[in-house]
Length: 412
Image (cartoon, rainbow, N blue to C red; front, side, top):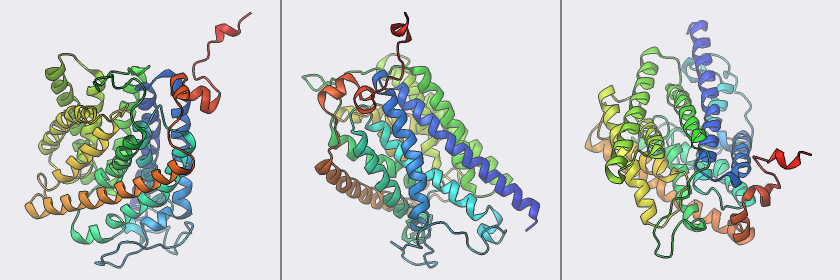
């Protein structure tokens, strides 16, 4: 391979790595905006911890757990290639990864993905989880559970051999986080005041919707790296198609969600619009490289409807998800994964069955592992803050700080 092409490929992958990293700011602003002012520092702390701890855990062993070197065609389930990330002999030359990138770029790009799974959980459990218990969960889930699931497809394991397809992680990233979020929300219970005495859901408005909107736009931008980088090179034809299908699905998801929610609730709900955009992005992630623009729009339109119905379903089940993470990442992740068997160049009954089996296996593993991890943490340190801590805010009790101090009170 020409050295110039190798350099271009690697630079594109590094740009995409930066875009995926930037998504963590988007997640933070979205979560802050859709929750209450008194928990802002707690949310920022969680999101900073996720990226720092996630990257370190991926360095210690997660990367080699996710890419352990299964023999081609094997039914690989679990293998570990060792601690650390020492580059192989050919790690800096085109012979590595077909000239798409170097070993170090590979590690960093994949490490950004690993941390993303835990941010999904953060939003769903906001405003009532103990910070210590959450941090313990992040270390275990990102360090062990996410890489194991990833190895089954992207590392050449049994899902890959079976024919399961997930281009950029609708199941392997978004549903992995979504299943854990579902289990955590179930174990935590709803926030105080979320449901009245008749179990009717009550709105708990976020304190900064402009932050939430900014977060979604940043996430959309970051998705260019999330999906575009998953081409694993700067191949012009595939990369440009992926960016087009990604954007069209996002736009269609937003329009579909706002129209659906307007028809159902008779108001123009900005938060539904925002989550519809994210639902479209998640929905196209499994097959962004396989779909035509028309198919991407259809996938996004369906994702927008799924979002509105999904949020209503979560409320009906008496679950409390402050940011709609379960509907966006889990339900739309499932939809997008199954869509690979319905639309695009791989569509067919056999592929649909492969997708369905993959969703079921990953879901069962993540639910069971999340339940075990959280139950153990709950028994030792607890996972829910006290009533007074929740009412007065986690910023004051967990961190002893205020995100928006009233400076006028200190004026003399």
